[in-house]
Image 1 (cartoon, rainbow, N blue to C red):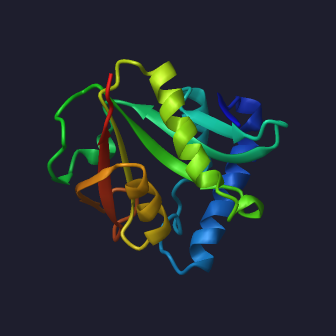
Image 2 (cartoon, rainbow, N blue to C red; image 1 turned 180 degrees about the horizontal axis):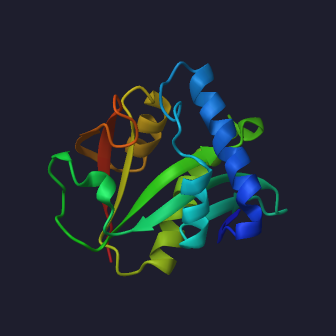
Length: 174
């Protein structure tokens, strides 16, 4: 399996995966991504800025997507908490989704492992990785913690006015 940067002609594909992720969250009763975020313009910006990555199987089937955002990430300007390492040398992982027809096969865990390798290769200056998820998204919280992220606080109303999201950080070793 491998990660690669999404191309602008793949905008519909990336949006389809995100929409599928929105439906999975709705089906689970989680209020994350249920308004107009992330929308087509956000995804288009991710691709245009070289932040959107597509996760493929070895036979090139698309499994999922993520966005890797280099600092500064203004999503965290209102963090209620404290970073493990106050630094401007970090990347943030946003908008992670696995196609629903690939759920339950361990791809989310594999995606996280491959994200770390990808970040190490493409962002070697990074000292930490930051990520957040909705307070009700227990599956993502479990995955985040499983990979050694520590909860450092929360943000409120960043993506939608009523959203409370838990924020995590993982320090990288050189």
